[in-house]
Amino acid sequence: GYHDLEVPGDFAPNEYLNGSTGQNRGMEIQGWSAALYGAITHGAFALEHTGSREITVRVNFPERDFETILLLPKRFGRVRLTRKNGMLAVSGVRDGYTVRVCERQ
Image 1 (cartoon, rainbow, N blue to C red):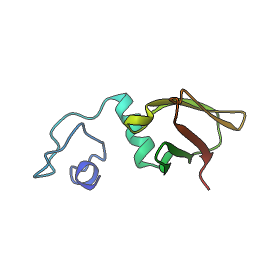
Image 2 (image 1 turned 180 degrees about the vertical axis):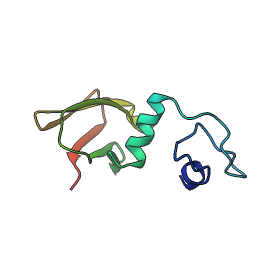
Image 3 (image 1 turned 30 degrees about the vertical axis):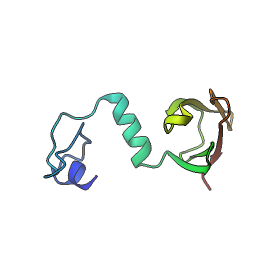
């Protein structure tokens, strides 16, 4: 993040960087990318492989209702994660796989 955010002085994420020089090589990332970037870099979600077919998603942001789709590592695919009335839930888990969701401690 240092060469992307701090070196140019704009503190804005960009589509890609030159792998050799670290220079910004594109425009700022699109809105959907920016949301994902913020979620990952600011710790909204943390993923932990807890087994070969099991992953745990930890949610780390204020307790408010939300609904989002997370693209997990390839074999786990895409799941819908929600918090409604303080209850976390996950749906869309592929057969044979387990995705657990909990509040980050």
